[in-house]
Length: 471
Image (cartoon, rainbow, N blue to C red; front, side, top):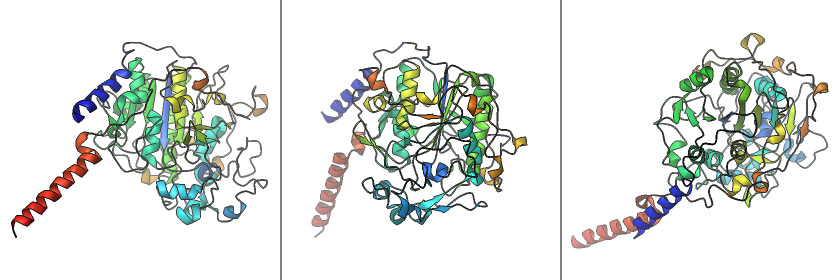
């Protein structure tokens, strides 16, 4: 009975998203026809942008929650332990990570126990000396300073939230349980005939996230970075692309501590430049974010969305011909906000309740004007590699501070919009039906806890019987 019941439940869940199979939804609400999501590893917003913009760049937009603002005294005692990464260093030791460590860091919203739990290395922060390329991207386009990871935990839960608005695991251990393919944004896109792909360094066997998805369609959807570059250059990029700098054989590209930060920036610059110089630039939005804070200090307590506590703040940069220049969004968002934008843009039902209640990043766009491309080139000093498959350990190790700030594409004084703002717009106010009504994970019977306990009991009884028979 149990196996039959499980089969029935799984079949019902698979059919849930297939009732509309065959529909083709190629029209978009905005001029965006291509969404690219690049998720880096393990840095909080304060760790990368906490000192933005330093160096006397007073003409730039300041973040609302600026780490060194003198009028913010709530974290003054802890800020005394903050240490700037020296200009000639491009990495720090890895802070202590984990579900337990992060909850202790959070300390019921007091945000004051990083030093004791994630360690002294968690109290470091980078400047333009290391982060100038990303700071320039934020300066020239849009960034969010109230964008949170979706889970107060590690990489796996957050990357699952990023594709399904849900995670059945609370840390980096697993699987099982698995996320059902039909309950991911990929499953929803496929039902509505919208193209997508997930790009990894080179091999399927070592891809990190797809194995957590029960029924993931590897053929034609799990592709390599080389295929990504070809599709960008010839204009055949799918509508939605997730690019992973971890898994698939990648090593050193993701900025995971203690990786060289410049290596990750080289990776980002290469992709951004290729898109800018390609046929797809005029219709593309690139979202660059970080999966989780990695144990690094951040001073803003994560809020609750749809009854769920978010994780720590992480960077978000939007690059698009329609992105506002030098704009800082104060909108409270998380990884599911990108799913919400995909659903909104292709006029799809919200993937699930959490996605529906996650605010949209629409205030970061200005659709009345399309900006021309202007790649950040190597001859201007930016560390742009010749290929996406560069050796990350050969990243240049000299201060990049001279690159920031960069010349504006449009003079800020002439921009027809404010340089900061926020929005509470989400899909729950637009649509009352969800694509996935109930998030359900999947665990094979032979891997379930009751089965394993039963098997253990049988083994113990058999061992006892054999032992007793020998007496």
